[in-house]
Each structure stands twice: as structure tokens, then as C-alpha cells.
Length: 373
View 1: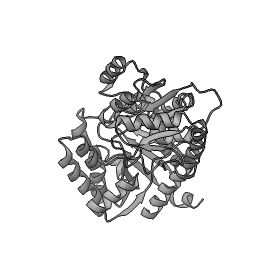
View 2: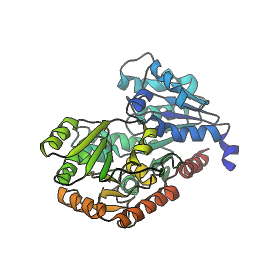
View 3: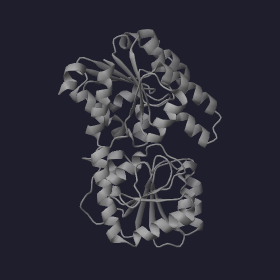
View 4: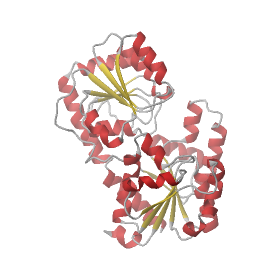
């Protein structure tokens, strides 16, 4: 392939989100999903890839998840993650001076890669799976003005920018006018792992996967389920778990809290359920929704940015409002129509295979990187 000629002698450095380690990814069940694209890139194209993480030597235990030519560079000398993020480019100068492309995983901590670009004159890709400034504004975070400042600097110095949703793409163009290449590359799905599986589904079963926090709007979902003959499985963790458990008990709603599940264990669980639901107040490009759709599940999502870019109402899923009554109506209308559920599930799978597969989106990243070489 043409990529091999240009990139097989090149090296890539991935800068983790500040404070995040491979252990973090492992403990919340994300490690398989997060490393998949770098395994794909390293096996077929790059000579070497370096992971600059915020874990200590314990991160080296997770080498088995990575291709042979991916090297883990754990934190050293400085225990404070914020201070380390500024010193990282200098502590690891022997590696970074010979790297060809620098890439950020998220905006928080992007300054490490920016400093490396400036000191070693390397090409920089700033990738954001979610917009830090939007999320901090929606959650009324005190760092929203800091978030905007970080984004402004990052987009100014980036040679290329990757955003994962159309709404984020338009937001960056409007607010920051990046001078480098700007590419829309959605989140990828391992469609050979997340796929329909043979087996019986539990009748009346609904599944949610994600963080248990306010933005996911799970209180509205539980209120919507009150009095309905359905069971809900909640996969994930977060600061609203105890509140949700109490609400479920008070309203006699049948809810199973499974906690964090390894990503590659999810397809089996998803395939045991009849319906997937994502009732969020706001999203960016929700991976859990894409994974459920890849499994051929009929899905319900709220009509908010990020979700309504993926779900085409009545074609590959159902959109509803964020209030409990609208969520309730959507659940009832879909669960009582088996023919529609079958049709939506098949179309959902087709949507993911055609637009979000790992191999297709890895090609898009490679095309972008080729332009920088």
C-alpha cells in the first residue's frame, strides 16, 4: 500500500491525557478499545510508536495489550502529574528529538506535545474526542476559561487537527480557525468484535453503557421506566451511582448495576439485551452507542448533538427528547414493535460497518499523517 512507503520508517509519539495511564484505561475497561487503532497503525505502517503515559512502572505490565513495536514511556522523576506534564518533553528529549509525528489523545495535557513541537520542530496532530470547553461549560466547571485558552493555543500550533463529530468540527472552525489541516475522523469500532452474536435475548431487557454522571441523564431514564415491565442493565461507574440505586429502589425499578466491564467483554452482554438506550443531555461522538449499533441492536438516543449525528430517526434508531415522558414513549413504542426493532438493528449494523469501522478510519488517519510528512 502507498502508506507503507511513506510511513514505515517513521515514528509516532502519543501523549496521553494529563493524569491518565494505561492502568486507568485498564481499570475502567477501556484499554482494548483505546489501543486498537495504534496496534493497527504499528503493525502495518509505522516503524515505532511511543506511548507517553502518566502511570509509573506499573504501566509496563500492560505491554501484552500492545503490538511489539509500541513502547510504553511511563512517568519518572516527578510524582505530580501536572508538573510532570510540563517537564515531560525535556525529561524524554532523547526519544522526542528523533520522533517524526506528535499526537495528543485529548486536549487536557496537550501542552506537553506543543512544547515538544516547539523545541524539537516536529509535526503536531491535536486530536480531541470531546471538546474540553464545551464539556466544562455544560457542566458549569470552573475551568471553562482555562479550557478555552488551552484550545486556542493548541489549535494555533497544530499542524493538523482531528475532531470526532460534525458539531465539534464546526465549533473549532468557528471559534479557533485552525491554520493547519482540519479533519473530521469519528470514533472507530472494531466491527469484527462488536457484531451480532447467535443466542437468545432476555425478554424486555434494556442496556445502558457509560459514565454514571449528570450528563448521561440516567435519573430521567429511571423515571421513564417506573411501572414498566422491563429490566435495565447499567454498565459503568460514576458519582451518581448511589443516587441511582436509591431512585431505582424507591420506584421498584428492576436495575442491574454491573460496574465497569472490559471492553471486549461487552459484545456478549450487549447481545443478550433487546434494546440499547443513551438518554444523555449532551454528547460528542458516543462510542458506546456505536458499539451497540455494531452489535445490531435497536437503539434509542436523545435528540442532542453527537447522538443525532449517528442516529437517523426511524432508519437506524429512534430519537427522543431528554425528558422522562419522551424517553418512556420511545421505549414503549419500540419494545412493542418487534418488526421495527429487527429493521433498526440491521440498519444500525450497516451504518457502523460502512462509516465507523476501525480499518476505514485508520486509513483516514494515515492519509492525514502522510500529508504532514
